[in-house]
Amino acid sequence: MTIGVCGPIDLRLLDWELKGQDFPETNSFPLPTHFINALLHRGYDVVAYTNSPHIKESMVIEGKHLKVCIAPQRPQPGRRFFLFEVKELQKLIESHPADLMSAFWSYEYSWAALRTGIPTVVSLHDVALQILLQHRDMFRLVRWAINYIVVSKAKHLIANSSYTYNMLDRGTRRKTKIINNFYTSELEESLQQPEQKGNYITSVSMGFSHRKNISTALHAFAMVRQKHPKLEYHLLGAGMEPDGEAQQYAREHALEDGVKFLGVQPFDVVLHEISHAKALLHPAREESFGMVLLEAMVSHTPVIGGSKSGYVPTLLNGGKAGLLCDINSPAAIADCVLKLVEDERLRNELVKQAYAFARDNYSEEVIVQQHLDYYAQVLGKPLTPKRSSTKKYKSAIVGA
Image (cartoon, rainbow, N blue to C red; front, side, top):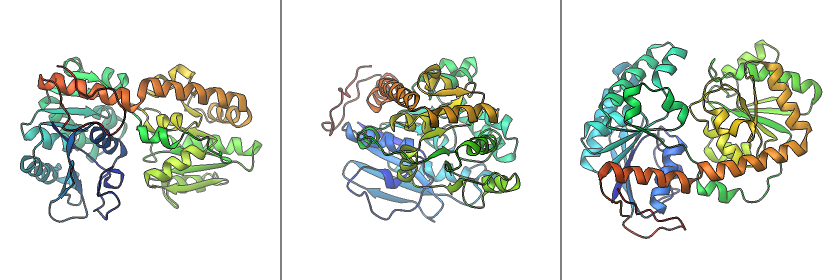
């Protein structure tokens, strides 16, 4: 059984014999990459399909059990409706086919997979219409249109949370299964020893926007800083770089004191920042899942999220696995930060509850098996890996 995975894949994180080689930089995201690794560990052969703006022609890299197909991406793909990217990915998939396609998410990668006619399961990461309503620009309009094509054509969909599922229309829900995001077994294994926490809190945000709400968090930290002048706030992600949008806003409002603007960093650096933080603050107003929160829960770092921020209250088990507050109020955020900074007993209790909840509901073993079960249902036959698992997992051979 060979499974194809089409999406934004980080070649640096792939667990194969070619790890560490100098590959082209791709449009990467950790989750699809971790999913590929999980399939390889369970004995499946995998063909990965992704793209890169740094190559002019398609290239194929072959390992023993993993083949990586990289298509080129041209500048400003949204202006061309991503048609070049879709066609190039489609050619690679047809030239190097798999038995089943798992596509992330409901945009160009899924569109390319669906055009091949190979049985395809599309994973939904967000609801494009809601994104468009919050960011009314031409790029999001194009993304919404592609999402409409993908969701209409797809026969099998996965929603990454109950929140995402409930945002879908009734017809789409009928062909959608809820399978949550997961954290990797490698993450858990690497964090067995207690971390020495630094004197800072952190936020990881891909964008300085109304939805991500970093501006409110900066005002809240300024309040906290009055009481704890040595505490720092580390900001990571797009828009958080030195002299980026976040720092410009902080400078204009005299909020830079104690804030470090670190910008986009490799995944291992982000995890190091999270695991060493005294707390993770996630001020997003809306979140279809919240992977950074889950990573903090596994990293034994207490978290703060919005009480009405999409899936966040569910991920934090209604406030038992993290503090929930009115994320639109700087004072409410500051109050939660102060509680965690000043109350060691509370921090320890939240960390304990969060880790247990994450392990029982969002671990790789639990979630990847749900994917395999669904794939068997889609194909109407058991999935049989080509070799034995390289780790101790429950059987990955499942019935229809």
